[in-house]
Length: 103
Length: 120
Image 1 (cartoon, rainbow over the protein chains, first blue to last red):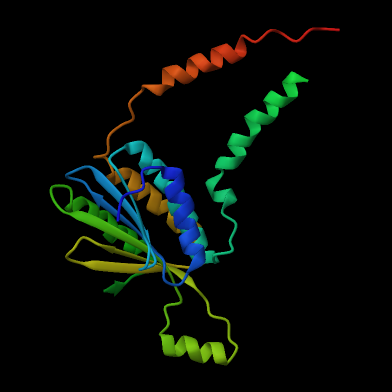
Image 2 (cartoon, chains in turn blue, yellow; image 1 turned 90 degrees about the vertical axis):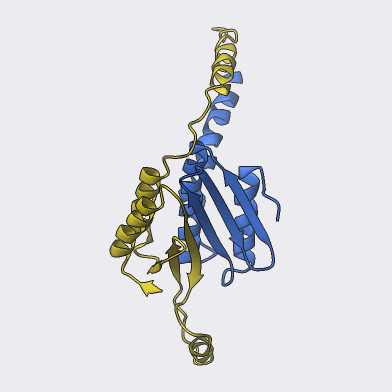
């Protein structure tokens, strides 16, 4: 399995994978301190998505993904994850402002 | 495999991270599970009972495996403590290079310099 290089793609596809088969999908994080490497893996034993990084900023993104998966797994695959990610809301606001100014 | 309560699990996870700084890795797996056997699940389904799912968390350093589970009510508290532990121990990752910060600052200036709205 090749690593996915885009973080957003990794998140989107792993959530899709989980929702398609919630009972057999697992999310694994592997951290190797001596090499400073972090590998994230989501698989349902048929398809496998992996993401590898050595950047501290990606650990912050991972925290959000952790929250998504905790929510999805503890509350069920239909749970709303928009509030945990919070990304869309922040992104949406500036564009709204911009539009208002032009008029 | 030892099934622990969330708090002892987090303590054990912390020491796993501390033990693996020189060599070795730590794996943490999240999985949705009912913590019941397939037979039991099938029985419950035929009896029309609702199956309660929880989030099962397993951690290993290759020598020892520990696990715990959190439900819909208590996962938020757990994930906050879990995030704190990760932040405290993932210190070998590289810091961000401040390359694109300059670029975005320039972009902001440009946007700010757009002509002022006319007063009528």
